[in-house]
Length: 304
Image (cartoon, rainbow, N blue to C red; front, side, top):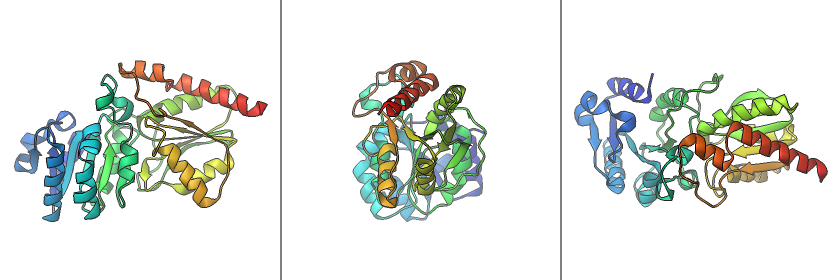
């Protein structure tokens, strides 16, 4: 079942569900005719989208608001913080083409600080599905939860067989080796899984963790990974500040845990626009390139 089909099926059962967009209909193109007045397109006005969604939430509705991730989280940030966050309204924000999924778009359209911004709002949930199957599986929980929520939209086909049902703050451990722990989220789980295969071919046992939600985050899974593995690696299509690398540092400090951690992210720069496979290759995020970078880090650690 696709995301649009799942949302439509849920709308049939829930009269409170309103689907909204700021002229970003690609993932929900079938819904206007199906939902009628419960589908609202405000045009290219992300601030208006959030203000209207907040108003509908105050009237007992559950709005699911779609827009390009960069414009949703940046242009409308103050509206999200003030109208949705402070009031703790059940508005569900769906950011389209976040991170590398923006591929051929330049810096203006690259959402590489969205996780940092959204998790900085008290009470905001941040959900980063690994694929469309996980996104669809998470939808009922997202809609039932009374908190506001930001979702990094992802319609990539599954690269792994998911083992655990979706739950806020609960990671999915897909491999449990004690050599290197790979912590990731979103579609990069696909590349992390490919890296796991390469690393194990080189005799390095791998613990692979799909974090799924970054707010709340599974602190126990992070701490256990750092304690069990020789090296923990965070992998994300986000700036270095405020994303998973920062989250892991915060968790380890809070729990008083020390360990070797290597962060793979974009630092403080935007990526070179191209088709997605070329973006991954150029930025060093393919499975094979990730494995090579991690093996190099292990060699460097061994020489110290």
